[in-house]
Length: 350
Image 1 (cartoon, rainbow, N blue to C red):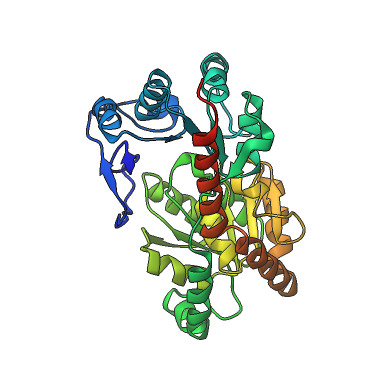
Image 2: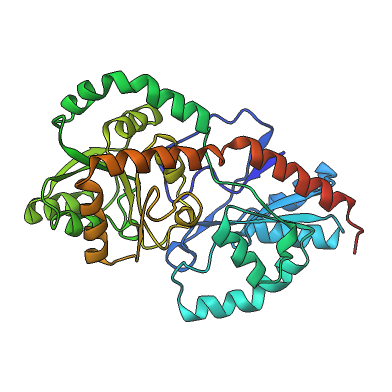
């Protein structure tokens, strides 16, 4: 049974058809986005639902939402083992008082868990820093159906010229795909400045948000050829991957970035900043792309120029991206999840 703390987060536009046992909790949400970087829905009904479920184990997604905090307290009081999942990492910029609060609150939550799941390398180190047993941390990826994405890209390959033409790109244009909400934290403004320093690069920006108008104006001012297609459905986004020559995610803060999994599965070279969680598992610098410091326009421009100017390099990097993506499908994560739950249930109760 999956309990969702809310129907959506930060008013994201995409939705999923949920075909597993689940319940979406209802409750007012506190305006905490600027402080916590996410919503904080108040859902006390979860306490009663956990009691009725007679669960052998509770898997708790993080520790910063009301639902997660309530689930941890319930588990401790009822001596039900909980497995703690984390996607946060230490590369994320945080204000001093937030770090102090986490240092006071998080270690006991981590140490009392009966098991741990992490999205990747950075999240694993984050859990260890708060007291988790490194040997008992399993990887549960924020990922996609890698095989399905790869297959669909191959199906779209014969239509690549047609799809590029529909978007106004010539066959020899170097197209850099950006996909995500147009918010300050995503760093699209930095990419625009970097692109203005690399002649011939064209941007394909899939996504919408409050900064769209500002970014369109800035692209025109800088003389950057940028095509904005707005919010893209899953099918439309796959077409964008088929059109692109490389993928860029230049976020100032990104716990993981599932779109990186999609780009890698699509066989694209990656250009990521060092605050993107996926940049430390799905990117091998110099093998399938480049990792640059967040906010560093010159470093980003240099990496962009290296990729834009060498088609053979892009093809080699793209092939390596696909190889790396293959190890981050659903299978290994499902097995890790089941192992973590079985081990937690078998662990002596304290």
